[in-house]
Image 1 (spheres, rainbow, N blue to C red):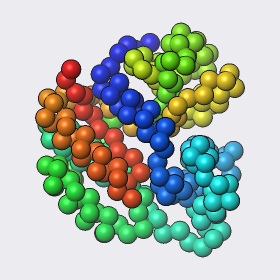
Image 2: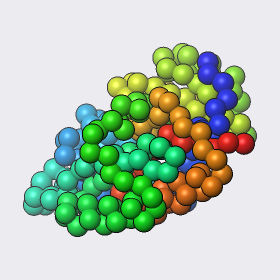
Image 3: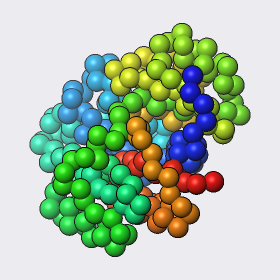
Length: 240
């Protein structure tokens, strides 16, 4: 199984911190609504189940979650939120994928374009950014709670794609189609991850000097604060 990787270590240290404080309720509810478009039954819609799990983990009341699902399925009237993916290049040639859910495409586009330009980044109209990433299920465990051997043994048994030791954390990778089965398998063995989601992982990373890395991290932070931005992925790796 794969060894240490500086990019992932930085990324997942942040993921652990983010998971502990959780996204704001607004974004989590929006995730549920958007996911419910694929069907309101969580047993037949893995994406919805994942969104509901996150919402429950943030202590969002069940009736609020149910209302969000009904909005997504159209039971409470048409839901106008649309999903978009923006591709951008930042300082040092870093590739950035920005996943958005918005009820006003033009407003969001204008705000994000301005934000990117201020941070020396720009939208990539060619679509080349997405080719640098692969969608994968990511199940993250805190190393202080579970040993690498224990996680690896279960991951192999469940048919996971890879396991990576990242110092403070252990990352299990799956194909998106098997993500929920692998996550359920771990939880049945009382191994609860700190983070579990299907997201984009870079196939190739770009190594940055401290100054550029600082600028990229600031940009990502600003993007993540935007109400319509659901997820941000980049392929930068900071030099030690």
